[in-house]
Length: 502
Image (cartoon, rainbow, N blue to C red; front, side, top):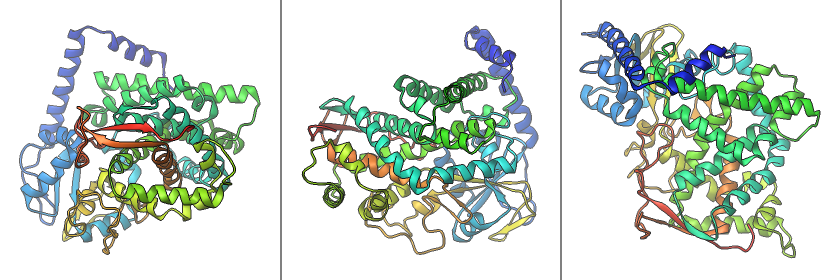
């Protein structure tokens, strides 16, 4: 999959001199200037969305680094509900409003895979594994993700996930202070490895930490140059290639170890092997979904736990979970908290937790900074009287609906009692139209288990860096398109263990 020369090039760059790195950076700048200036357009043809004023070259970095501000600024500067700009040689059209939202989510020619391939760049790229996939392989990966969420498989994951929670939470000590956007995210990464890969990896804390560090390298290496000029061996791209190669090797070694052992285990890898899937499908499933699942669910879990720090809903959730324990766990059993929670059946977690459901729904609304991306692979389309040409990229920011004060008054306020807006696609926390989050059943379960362990296992509150209690929770940073982290050091969790045994 990777040549020796490519890996050697990445290694060589990482240890190269400052002059070499500066020369490569200047080369990148030259290419960006060449393509950017060549793609600048001065006017708008009839029926096309208005162009964003100013140099389109200068729009590239804000789109990737400060997307929330950039898109809002574009609507303000143009005074329109649709506007366009050039991403080097590509046309990008940003849409908003109810009719545009409806068209965006229902148009069968707006392709998600093509949209994210060019405009995101946050998923590890391996030709034939996570990119340039045949339609058949994409459908097969989706089918396997559905299989992971069948009742039997999900039920079997409850106890291992809770055991992961217990083990990780024990490392926090009986009391202390930590950053939830580090510790809770680390916990969700561990759980994602458990749910979507294999016991060989999930049972090895060192290997899990190694994987997380490598995926963090991929995140930090995602730049405008690596997304728009992936063929250019620049500094960030070589680092991404190096990290991707290391992740690939870890996953392949785990698969090889399982096949050599001949031992069948009740995990996702075994399911993939039993289905006789191609090696590329198995590697692509694990490599791609690990990062997608950990980012989305890790972000939501970090904010869910943060918002519950001193919120009135905390007591309601505790009462809800304690009622589940009363219904399904014998009062004479003196097991640990994780063992007691594992006795609650899947059906109860899914149908008897309305308070947790409302909390997850509101957390997704306020703290999931998603911008949906598509490419129009069909004929020209008209939205609000403006033409979306074939081949153009189309972008819809979820903030258009989720942070709209006309639909959700005081939109930055965390209020689980809110009702979903009664307009078409008035809530898109799990996607909408023909594109929904395929892993949402697993994600909901993971969020409920983590929140239950945290709320019943610890007393905790939000504090600042001095340890003084916060009056209000921090505000999500929608410019952080991956994790939505608030300002660094703005809030921490002060916790104290409340049960004898987690």
